[in-house]
Amino acid sequence: METSKFDIADYLDSNEMIAEYLNEVLEKGNNSEIIAAIGNIAKAIGMTKIAEETGLSRPSLYKALSEGAKPQFSTVMKVLKVIGGQVRVNPITA
Image (cartoon, rainbow, N blue to C red; front, side, top):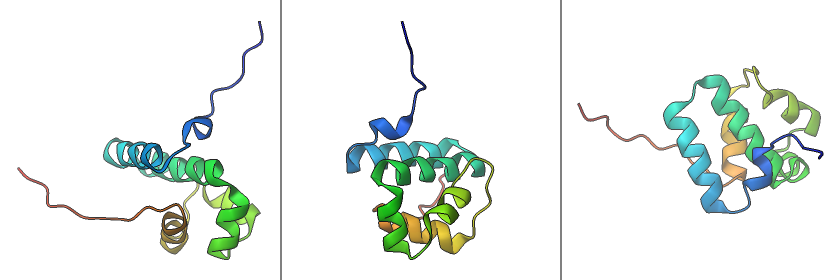
């Protein structure tokens, strides 16, 4: 029996699934995991589409959104806008 590597991007097939995944990672993940999650979402949507809509090249997107990368905040915001995400701040209750 042959097995394949699990790829979360294969399961991010709706806006609701993407939002749930990203919110979960934002709540519990560290910086590296958040960047990797945004990369997984970009991959699920299509890196070519993301590149066209952000004005960034595909290679630079792959590099910026890879595990361990430290992309510029402006890059993260551009990608979030294209994938339909937004940053929102809610007060933390004690």
